Length: 282
Length: 220
Image 1 (cartoon, rainbow over the protein chains, first blue to last red):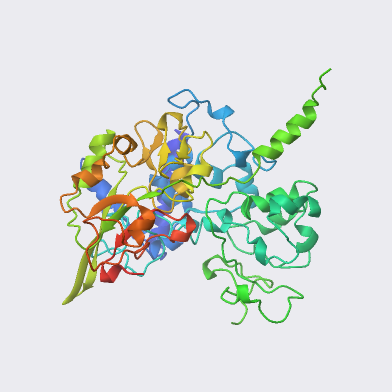
Image 2: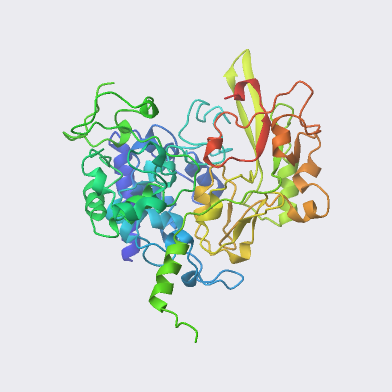
């Protein structure tokens, strides 16, 4: 009973948000027996497209996509592999805690995700085309110029996943003579031994909990693992993310050659408007 | 007398070893797909042949033919982009898998999967920049294209290639497909194959083994 009350409340909140000027339109009334029609109407809900998706709340998304958080991993694979006994190489370090979990739950609701991150559905999902998962696939779809998603994907991995799953760009980091796994003992596995003075204006975006990250990074012995977890420790991709060079106190004059094309502030849609994160003039 | 093992030291050494960064396999030859975006008529015979071969129900599609159309009269255009698993040189799916269900073959670079080892965490599905791993909602596991590895072993080509009536889809050593030296009907005499088309994720992410003959409106 409580569950149905909650579902009703979420739906009511969605409708209220839609009608109160957020740019989200309500769906047309569906015939109760017309499941195919309902499905089509849901697929082509304005929430799936720009600009409404930019202001969509997680509650609105979860009305239909609740399996994102409800689905769990299988306890045993079809061949008998036990999830609890299988750990990948990147799941062995001190910062990986808890049972095996699904991709979405790992990023949204596990304790570390809630501690260090503040990811929302539309942090990654910026729209898609329901017909072919390709821009320009129908008259009403996103234009070819849209890079909010890529062919066959509902996100653009280069502007989302790569931020935390790219290579550590150690060759441009002053003082590092090799990959972090080779030199971390020299620095007592402590990134802050240098980064207490360099690039100190960091993580000031609304999808991260900057204060909690800094606190976790400062923990003796494991602090480096926290940083490395998102800065090279789980590098699914072979390139590094071109992080913005948000100016920091004492930042040297002039821009190094490798950073010539880097932006001077994080993406506007994620900026926290505080004194330390105001966009710098280009 | 043998030295008694210091179990604490062994445990520390083991933890250090398993926490090392993963190194991609470097195959002797890297096979890849080529697709002619211009001559493809979008019949989706390749999709159906793939679903037939792999016994896929509604939902998962290892191969997908995407229609791209646009412009304003009289300057209108339409072309198709056809992708399955790109058997990347450095696949993103592989290192994410907690059970070792995905691996890359040293002989031909095919990225294969044993879905019976899958626990359905869907990390590979999210990490792939090209949408290759497919969720099977009925079995709650991930499946993907393995370039019909059994056909390859038997000296034949994958079902999708064999089903293509326009001969716009083919496989071959990817280096030769990129430089246009591999004999295939998918590449015309004046065509210049490319590694990326418009709206496809950056190939530098995982170095996908795919070549396209691009449409003029699909060139990057």
